[in-house]
Amino acid sequence: MIAYLSLVLAGGILAVVVILLIWYFRLWLQAYSTGASIGFVNLIFMSLRGVNPHAVVECKIMAVQSRLAIVETRVIEALYLAGGDIRRVTLAVIAADRAGIRLDWDTAAAIDLAGRDILDAVKTSILPKVILIPDPDDARSDVLYGVAKDGVQLKVMVRVTVRTNLLQLIGGATESTVVARVGQGVISAIGSCDCYQEALRDPMLITRKVLDKGLDADTAYAIVSIDIADIDVGRNIGAKLQIDQANADFRIALALAEKRRAMAIAKHQEMRAKHAKSRASVVHAEAEIPVSLGQAFRDGNIQTQNVPVSQQRSSRRFPLIANLAASNTAMVPD
Image (cartoon, rainbow, N blue to C red; front, top):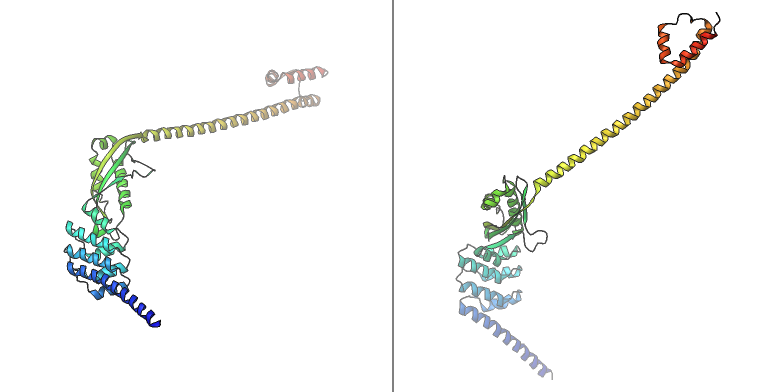
């Protein structure tokens, strides 16, 4: 019984080994027939190192059949173990070689490990990409707004054609930076126009001013062209600002006038109070005059025969005092 189980176990192991050998032999034969030159033992060790031998063989065959420079198998394995996409890197190097773009395996692998899509970058370098500014899918705004020196607003849509700069792909700014720079350049170019009609008459004026600024510096893209897709006249911002400024000046003047009016009313009330106080002083002084006259008559300081001119004038100004003086004179005995 034990011998039978041992025989069955040995047969199963042998069957598994044969199947594996047949599978590795197929890969080896495929590589050998295409000139990839990958050893049979190396295929087995790839599995032990955690590398997919089928993917490595496929990439090596594509490189050899495309007549690329010799790419060593260990280099492909290293990229696979580092987490790179060896298939897309291989396709990118082949596409660049066919298009006459200088791109070696090490550079492509570094770009892939940096998180960039190397195959898409090569395709964009071969076939330039068109970027609409602003993005039609962006719900915040569908046009760029610029204001000329005369205060008239222009609404612009820009079409930017870019090509990937493979040399700047590592460490270079992304597409969003290019979009922001171009948008800023367009707004600045419109703002430098003395009249909005200049931009309407020659939209290439905006394009030339933007291209002269070298907006693709230190970016992963090279700007091929900038085209004005649409331009339209918006609001007269300058007139609106002048109206708002006039309204603000009017409110300020109205507030100052109201302040002066309030100060005038306060000054008027103050003068009325002073006038009332002066009147009170006069009334108080008039009340003292009869007493003083009576005392003067009693003391014999006033002669009734000759009334001075000043007293006559006083009688015209103060009739009450004159009557009192007359009554006091009548009471003095001869």
